Every structure is written in structure tokens, then in C-alpha cells.
Amino acid sequence: MPWRRLARILWTPCSDLRTCRGVGPAAAPSFSRLSPRASRCTRHAARWRCPPVPSCPRRRLVTRLIAFRDVTMVPCRARRQPWPDRHNHRQGGGTAPMTIDADFAQVRTAFDLMDTLDRFQTGDELRDALLGFLRGFGVTHFTITQLPQPRERLGPHMILSHWPQAWLAHYDRNRYYRHDPVGRHCFATLDPFLWAHAPIDVGAQPLAARVMGEAAEHGLAEGICIPIHDVAGFQAVFSAAGERLELSPNARRAVHLLAYYAHGAALRLARRRRSGPRAALSPRERDVLTWLAAGQTLGQVGATLGISDATATTHLRRAREKLGTSNATHTVVEALRQHEIRL
Image (tube, rainbow, N blue to C red; front, side, top):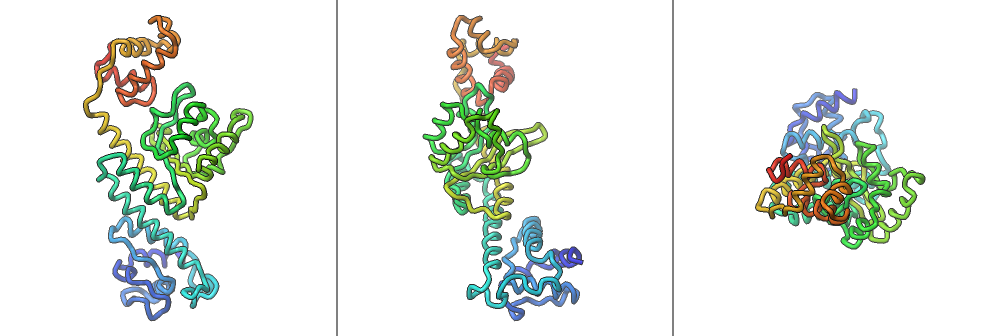
């Protein structure tokens, strides 16, 4: 039974598998503590240069699960020819072992990076660390952001961004998030997806193809998107892009897990910035928030206060920046919580 063999291998002491980097039976470690069936299966895995196993028990288990799902889930007797020239792959006969080694190196690097995310003190440090890891997959830009409402700007919703500034300004100025098929698909799925797999509704999003084409002109030709959800529903999106991405299935899983850790670290840094001293709200900003709390729209607030809709929107934006909030409702709630306004 493959699962029984897998269970025995998973409980093999770490020192046995960590040194297993040879290409023949002579390089395999001692398996005296295993049953004969487990020894045969483990030696077979040893022949194909199993990568070093991390010292942390949880990461060791995850790494082995990924490894043996890809390599040893097929029974030994059925794996007579795992790939061409199995005894001479160091001389270029077979490429699968080297591919597996590269995948494991990326997974180990992702786990190591997750261990250090909480140590960064600034957004720039976090941004540089994430970009350094993602460049190995062809990623040149990434962003962690919430998605705005149809009448809102994208800028205040950015949590951490390394997006091209020219594209970000062009995207925000033209309100492209209303036509972006990637952003729209984030609300419809829990799973990571490639930009190319985002469905386009020509009727609802007539400018969708134009948005994707102009993104490619700014160096964002291919991308991967990870929607971030919690019990309350959709929270944010982690999106990474470049001219050409190289993401194996294991690499996608690593980026998926890293996105959640990065989102949490970016939120902690954002809250730390907001907890410091901030500018007080102006009397007019308090008036706008008070009438919004009473249930009026921005147009009604402008008419009540004798100002234009654009001016009312500007006051709301400034109040949102001071309070560190993401939308009008969040701003009103935060202003009430901090006793800036009263009902």
C-alpha cells in the first residue's frame, strides 16, 4: 500500500533523510530501523537525491508530504522507469531530479522568509524581502491591496505596493478597477489563479481587454493573483506580475502560503503607523463625517453644507488618510470610536 510506505518514510528520523543526496544505492544511509518493505521504498527515494529536510518538525512534515506526493506515491514495483536514463541523470540524461531539487529550494526559501516577516520594522524592508524571493519566479512587481468601491480611488486602499508608479496613476485616474477582470474574479474564487485564467465578461466589462493590454505595456504581461479571505469574506488581494512568470505547481503553493503571511505582516506595519501621532480632523471634515453617519450620501452632504460634491469627497479623503481607513463606512466607524464625531 503506497500510503503505508509513505507513513513509514514520514516517521523516518530526520538524520537518515538529511544526508540522502547520492545517486546510487551506495550513497543511501542506514535503514536498519525500518522494515524490509520500508527500506526498499526509502532506498528507492534515496537514489533520486532527496533534498535536505528542515529541522522544524512541522516544516519537515510539510516538505516530506510535498516531496513524496510527487516522487513516491506510485508503488516501487510500478516505478521501474521513473524517467529516462535514471542512472545517468548527472550527465544530462534526465532532468526531473534537478527540477525537484529546484522546487524544494524554493519551498525552503519561502518557509525561511515566513520565519523572518515579523522582524521587519518598515514597509520598505518587507517589500525588498518579498521582491527578492519573488524575482526567482520572474516577478518584477507585486502589490497587496484592498479593492475599492466603484466611486472610490485605489490609492488609499494600498497596503503594500511595488507597482509601477506610471501604471498605478494611469489605472487609478481611469478607474480601471471597474473593468479589471482580475479584480472582478477575486470576488468569485477562493483559489489562486493566473491572470490569463480570469474570465472576461465582454458585456459587463467592455474595457477588460484594453486594461490587460495596457498592463502588459507597463511590464505586467503575466501575473498571479491570490485572493485573501477570512471568516468575514474577501479582505485583500496579493498580486504579482512580470514579463514572463515561471511558476511550477510547488512554487505556486509556496507563493500562495507566503501571500497570507505577507498580508498579515503588512497589516501589522500599517496598524503600527496608524497608532502613532496623527493630525486632527478639521471642523469641516467632522461635519462631513457627521452627516455621513446620519445616513446621507456625499451628494446630500454637499447640499446640506453648501459645498460641491467634489469638495465633500476631498474632505472625506483627507479624513480617511488621517484615520488610516479604507472606505467611507470604515472612516465613520473609526471617527466614532475615537470620539471625533458624535451622533
